[in-house]
Image 1 (cartoon, rainbow, N blue to C red):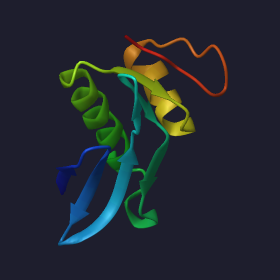
Image 2 (cartoon, rainbow, N blue to C red):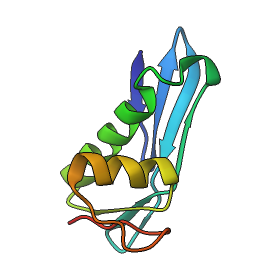
Image 3 (spheres, rainbow, N blue to C red):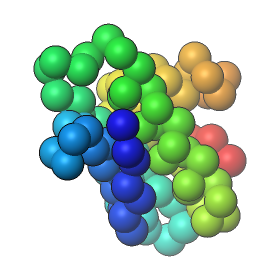
Image 4 (cartoon, helix red, strand yellow):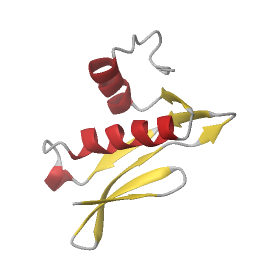
Length: 94
């Protein structure tokens, strides 16, 4: 599996085909993870988790603040970063 980092998304590529992605548009230094997708055949194999982990790492390397509105990313942040979800739409970490 190869992961390609673009400006506001990371793609998971397998055998030359894109099989997953995470998107994180930016506004004022805040990057909002708003979409995570993995091809059905690869679900349950940790690809989505790896996409979100890489997105958070990339955002932090840019000096940005991470938020999420994607349900998968919200759950990932709660489990892996101790983020307390205060609303169903947002989970900020600094």
